[in-house]
Length: 182
Image (cartoon, rainbow, N blue to C red; front, side):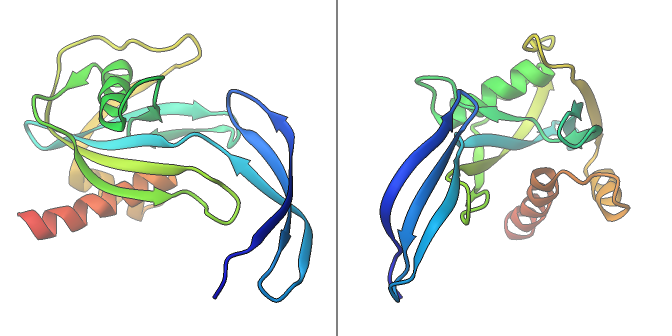
């Protein structure tokens, strides 16, 4: 199997949020795709945050594109000069006020949608977290903190009440981690 060749590449738009690129590609058998669209987004980080009591720290917020409220794990993007670990710890502190004295554990690094997007999401486990600060939200963030037993999150997923994909997949990554390490 061979890789595709990029014959031409042009940006349709570029923004701080992401870019849309239109490429012309040649397939291994010589076929040419005139208009292949690629979304360039920044990588992001998210985390399962477990308290000292083994409860999970979640956030609930309105998501405009889906026009609904979602229960999610804390997440965000790196700021200039940050490592991924620094970024997730900052995001957790800003969104929830929680911190931990333990190092983040990387559960996975996955492409979001490699067919049309360039970004990855890194999912971490934060253990023995405790609330040490008030939320420090950006002006456009309106976030409620939700703390629940980890099994309750599993039940909400089973009932279709938690449907944000990265939260659901992180829950199952945690279950896999727990099977291997507990």
